[in-house]
Image (cartoon, rainbow, N blue to C red; front, side):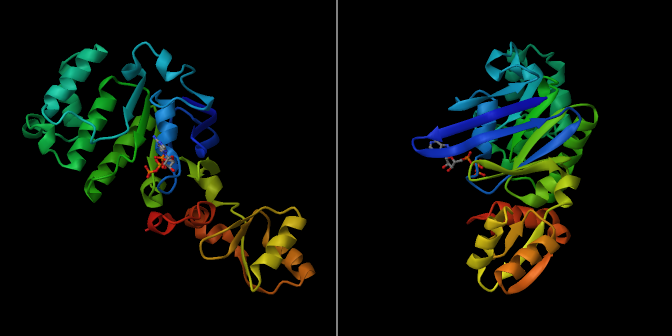
Length: 299
Ligand SMILES: Nc1ncnc2c1ncn2[C@@H]1O[C@H](COP(=O)(O)OP(=O)(O)OP(=O)(O)O)[C@@H](O)[C@H]1O
């Protein structure tokens, strides 16, 4: 289990991660979703003890990463697949990892096979690997110590569609056997297919979290007015929370009838009023993480 409590990281005056709290339970895949620069990598680096938090804590199975006696046996990490020694072969890289962790060397071959790197690939230098092959090798390193927790930052980068499908299967199976998976992506489609739970981050803050089903239901009301400011002010006065989406509409955490009443009382002319349910996760992602890279994120 991964527990993140009020985690923050400031770089100078810039809050890269701001009071982030979530948990990842055994038996589940949690998708950590947000546009570029949202704070996903910084959060993961803090969980893995690579970046010191400005505030808050993160633990794996109740213990801080730095305090785990043999971290690779508890938690498998893939943060940056390109950060591997280019001069070693895949086999050498994994053998070294096995020695470091005290894992039986026989597991090296098995694990390479498990991630789809055959004997020829295993003997090739990592410098000659494609990004997809590096991701597979990184995943092999993460799995080698038979950990119960996996933390993977954008693991689908560089994988072809068949590779992405394969990875989803592997992560699903890992979780179904009782493992805990935290997996980040800036692409909604990538995590939607495999995650049980979603944690959505935007501008360093958690903007939504819950089970995929929860997030698909109860997403509130999408409303658009001729004069958005009048509507926004009226909603605020009525105590309703509204978030502006990239297309100018508002997502309000209330039923359409309540929103319609507030608009009517304020004399706001509505040009759209509907339940956000039908748009599901895509609408949540578009609305809650409204920013420059959002349109790319739902491609
Ligand atoms: N070492 C650093 N020094 C200063 N600012 C940083 C540093 N690392 C990250 N940041 C800033 O913190 C914010 C969050 O970055 P982070 O890499 O965590 O986002 P991300 O969600 O992982 O994005 P991406 O998908 O692009 O990797 C960004 O504004 C980034 O510029």
